[in-house]
Length: 187
Image (cartoon, rainbow, N blue to C red; front, top):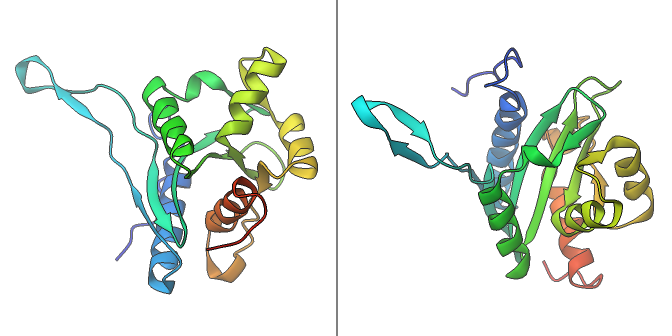
């Protein structure tokens, strides 16, 4: 039986509740034949005296859906912005490689201190362009909301249980895929 998500009670577990809900949602998508998405563990390196230390973090989730591959990282933040430093170098590299290979790469961000806990899928190309264009070191919620209304690279993820899926990330992934191929839905 699947365990309930862990509470967001400390720095180490930050984002684990969202990751657990995404993993539960991925299982629903897999049973429906809508895609296969797996949670990816962190790479670890053995240190002295049998101690394990994390070397670098990969994006949280990788998989495929009909017609495209996808890679994304799930983030939760208590402030109305997501610092770019929360996306580690190896995560950036893998997201970029997925995008370069024609896949869908995005950040799934939940703003936990905001009313209704708004959640967005930020296309990785948009994330990079935003930081470069604005010279900022974080993605601001107000700008994300504006982008969701004006571009096909940012999507609000409605967590009201669409199709009995706790976090319906696949809808945003499909929309990002359709945008990437120029509006032709081949999947």
